[in-house]
Image 1 (cartoon, rainbow, N blue to C red):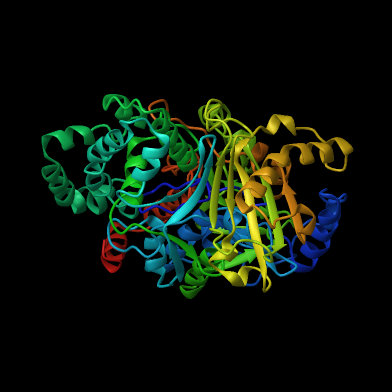
Image 2 (tube, helix red, strand yellow):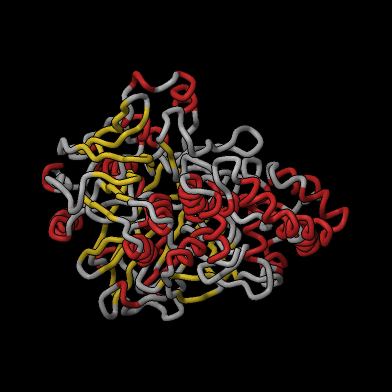
Length: 582
């Protein structure tokens, strides 16, 4: 759910932006101050990540990657495996971007994605992140589970994944025809999954070599999937690149609960409702959740373990990571990206390419204005943005809390307002339920958030030290507190929380340097498409949630892999696909 699912496809449910990345001593001082009064620190100088004077190793590489988010690390790791000299420059002192973890008073918090599936899958239909980890030869131990709690206006229920588990919920909350309509939906879209999964994202590259690594390589399996679907299924597969609402409408699904539920899944998956999401994305999700043997997975030791695994794999092949290295600008020489200049003034040369893992808006800020074509500038500036996030991180005593507390909870306050309305949907993750080492003994760690629905305009221009800002934080976080109290139930008390952290859109903008604290581009299927990975500047590439395939962990992992593949020969790319069995 909006907690950050990793699907075997190239999409994923909301990946919230992270809240902080500081050295451990600064973190403790800063957040202890915030714990007591709910305010962020009053002085920026006390928490700013200090720019390093220099970093280990030579100030040059074949490829320089700006940012160590999931996309940047996947790209760097694969390039290192391909034999390239790679250097990743990270502004903060923890890698991972929106997926990093941080620790306060012994509580280890996820800052972003926390609901995953498909980590243990292998082969052509595995999710792109699993394929990257496989290529890097690193493992990621996970705990398996199969359910999450749902709180809706009609009541509450434990939602389990699987082909028939949802029937009981439909019987209770749907119309008399709900079960029949749901089965009709499954019968229509599950056969499409074979076609949707026939082309692994890791086979894609940004040049004509894709005809060899993707088209020719997977044409037989794609043809086979169409034959197995039959004429009716093959006709339905033509809708994979159309909005999913068209599939729902063509099936004449009328049940309000089903339509609300599918809208919710779509929004949590891609930040848009069914009229804005590609059918292919929803088909992937349904195939992963509503097939026999489905399960969810949470990484042991938290989502920071995902980042650690990617860094470990990259370094194993000689890749370098320099933290505390803030890129001030991308240097253009002879009309090409030749490197970057750090805030310290140091120039880092890129002999072959510069790859930006920043958003499209923030990448634009790094470029000299005179080298940016007007068409590129206009496209970036006119691309709509998703809204931002509110976060609530809590550390509390487990005494008196029920023992069957699940890891994930979702609260929908009002279907009529729409799942994309502000202050309406709250996501809650309590990962210490499955990985107790994330909290001190006898304690729990919790992360609640509003998934990309918090308007930046409410916060724009506010002084973080002002009473107005403090009051707005209390007001806008109240919906998360109430959701937490509803989910945990008796035994929970706000006053007994040992750690209380509230993050706002300004927190996102400040620490992740995300333009307006945005979650990412708000690109709707059928109206526009995510940009590719090349730019008008030779030797400058982009990866991450501003590029194809889009927002989410699997999507950004795929984008990083596509850029890496594009910078090496078709032969090297094909050898990698052979090595990981796809």
